[in-house]
Length: 284
Image (cartoon, rainbow, N blue to C red; front, top):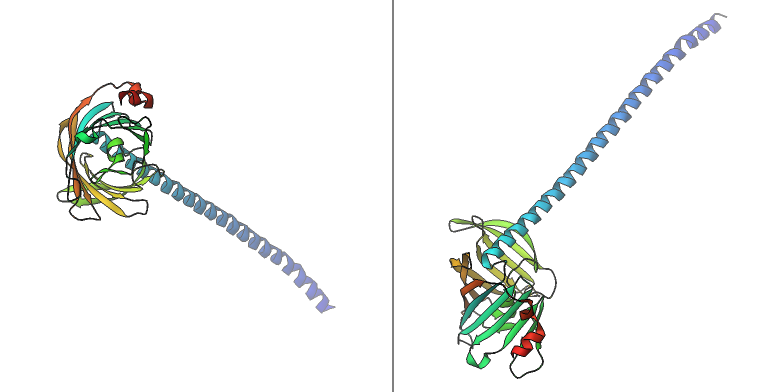
C-alpha cells in the first residue's frame, strides 16, 4: 500500500517536470530553426549581392573598354565625312614603288579608295559598303569582289585603308595597364564580331593620359601574329591632333615593312551617290 502511494506520488511529480523540459527543448529547437533560417537568408542575400556586384563590375569594364576604343578611333579619323591622301612606301619586299591613294569616307560603312599612283593602276577604284568591297577597273564592265583581309600592297590590307575605325568591327576588352617608357598604356584585346572583318583579333595599346593610339598587333583567323603597327607623327590634321604616320612591320618576315603617311585631310560633305556601284561604273 505504501509502495503504491509512493509510485503514484512520483508519477504526479515527474510528468509535469518532463512536460516542462520537453516544452523548453521545443522552444530551443524552434529558436534554433528560426536562427538557421535567418542565417541562410542572410547568406543568400550576400551571395546574390556578390553576383550582382560582379556582374556590375564586368559591365563597367566593358563600357570602359568601349569608351577607350571609341576615343582612340576619333583621334585616328574624324567621325564626320572626310577625304584624305595616303602614300604607302614599302621596303624589304618585292614592291618598293610608292603607292598613292585618295580616300573618301562617310562614317565607317562607306568608303571609296582611288588609286592615284603608280600610273599603271591609275583609275582603279575600290568601294566599300558595310563589309562588302569591290574594285572597279577601267575598261572592265563588272566590278570584282575583294576581301578586306586581302593584301593591297606591301603590309597593307584592303581593310587597312577602307575601314576607318575599329569600333563596330571588334568587341573590346581591357586586359591590363602597361608601363612603356614614362607612359601608362591601356591594353585592349579586340575580338572580331564576325568573319567579314580584316583581322580576327587585335591587341591595341592606347595612351592612358590622352587616348592616343600607340601600337597594335594584328592576328589571323588561325590566331597567328601577322604584323605590328606603330602610330606616330602626331600633328594637327582634319581639325585636331592625329597620327599622320603608321608603320606596319611583317611579323613573319623580318625587315619587311610599309609606311603609311596621311596628308591633306579635309572634312567635307560627300554625296550618297559617290558610294553607289552604278555611279562608280560610270566614272570608269
